[in-house]
Amino acid sequence: MKNNEKPSWYRRWFSGNNLLNGLLVILLILLIIFLSWQIRFIFEPVRALFTAVGAPILIAGVLYYLLSPLINLMSRYTRMPRRLSIAIILILLLAIIAGILAVVVIVLRDQIIAFINNWPDYWRTSQNFINETFKSAQFRPVREFLNNTNTNINQSMIDWSRKYLTSGVAGIGTFASTLTSVGVTAVSTPFILYYMLLDGHKFSAFISEKFPRKAQRSIGQLLTDISKQIAQYIRGQLGVAFAVMVMFGIGYTVIGLPYGILLALMAGIFNMIPYVGSILAQVPVFAVALIAGGPKLLILAIIVLAIEQPIEGHVIAPKILGEALSIHPVTVIVVLLSSGHIFGVLGVVLAVPAYAVIKVIVTRIYTWWRSNSEFFKEELEDGLK
Image (cartoon, rainbow, N blue to C red; front, side, top):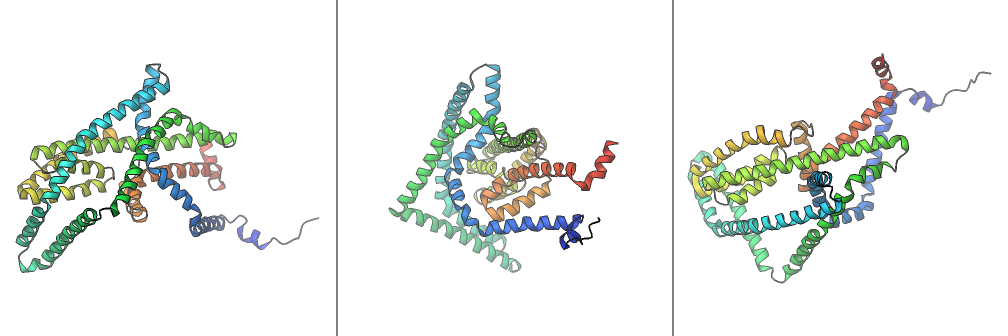
């Protein structure tokens, strides 16, 4: 007997209708995101845990990707036990960091103290420069805007100095808390780094073993690709940032720019923010050059930038960073702007590597979907012919 039962409304609407099925999936995903946001208080312990241990884990993770190739080379060519190789590298690293800090901290301290002492003179010089340059009546709105901005900056500096110089005993607790956090980070990071270097290469296999046997190979390859993306980004960005710091340090020293080492250090740090960082780093440089040395020093600073940019863009960056992440510049800028607006400074720093990781995951999922979905069945069959 034939089944004359009428199909339900669900089968009439959704069975075989790929468009409605796709819209339903999107709706469910958005609903999950909305409900997750509504119960975000459940994740507060996770945020607190990350706040407590996030800094040492992030620092150890960056150092892991920098040092793991060296550890692998030592273990391979010296036949030295991995534990011993790690111990030797960490001791040498701590000695190098201590030596660099001993020199850099003294130089930065002297330059920061000199900047604070000379700040009143710089402020008066900038005020006179603004009034003299924009003294014409048609530039009155520009002159007032720059003067107000300059006054606000000066007042902020004064308020900041009063706050931290007159807080006295009230600020001891905050200082002690900050010092404790820094101390805990400094002590715990080497231990976390040691165990990362010791067992980090086993992480991919450890995770993939928890999945069904058919999926283990795919999951392991996915984790390997993610690790490669992160490693390429970290090594490339830090390498370029260090090269930029050295080039600007030499250039600023040659032209006699005040606080050249401090400004070169800032340029290297800002350079880790792709595309936008290089522009932001030049704002304080040009301001100091114009105020401290006038138009002549400003022109020299521009010349240093004009020499540095081609070397960085055509020699250093392609060699060190290359096209490791294969991300379009417009995409990078959009990711930086959106993550900076949502997550602040930390979002700007982590935006590009996080996007690279998400891109690897989404690409893998899309590849799997193409190979298993009915949508692309005809294309797959054509490809096999």
